[in-house]
Figure 1 (cartoon, helix red, strand yellow):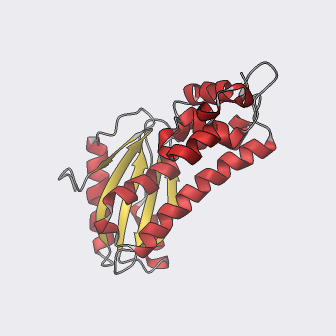
Figure 2 (tube, one colour; figure 1 turned 30 degrees about the vertical axis):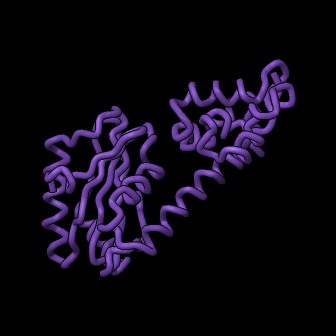
Amino acid sequence: MSLKDLPLDARPREKLLARGPGALSDAELLALLLRTGLAGKGVLQLAQELVDQFGGVAGLLNTPETDLKRIKGLGPAKRAELQAVLELARRALAQTLRDRTALNSPQAVKDYVQLHIGTRPHEVFAVVFLDAQHKLLAMEEMFRGTLSQTSVYPREVVVRALHHHASAVVLAHNHPSGSVQPSRADELLTQNLKAALALVDVRVLDHVIVAQGQSLSMAQGGLL
């Protein structure tokens, strides 16, 4: 069924205008972006199939361009729109962290990290660099590893902290396995980086672990 065949109050655009975006399901919001479906498949059905296939909107938005190209019904224009939505979300969170002390908005930090690396199929280690007021300077992906391990060199983290004139950092990495519980190796790495960065007077405020749809703050969990 196409959108024009739906009752007026069930069409995503009219529903959004009448009741607000919160009233729409993930598939309905995605359908507004996609606008058109395929021959024999309405846009709502296409949107729902994409949400189901990628494990939610976050999974779809974080899917690499090379993988999106294989999806029938996602041409260049639609892929560009999906990527634009994700980049707008990243920039909105980045602005929040630039305008607000990171320590006062730990959820924004976790959301920011989640958007960058939460759905990667391989393990990524990143560092969020903060100024003396603990506001965002930059975020860099420092190292990539296999699905089970990442080699992180404290010296390289120290070099980048000095490059950004950072006063503090938030460490971050993802667990493609889906569990955000820190391993013993994660705890040892955190302590090694804390010691290395302390030598140049840079504080480690947190180590955030993310997986698709979830995150954990080692600082909030008393593990830092």
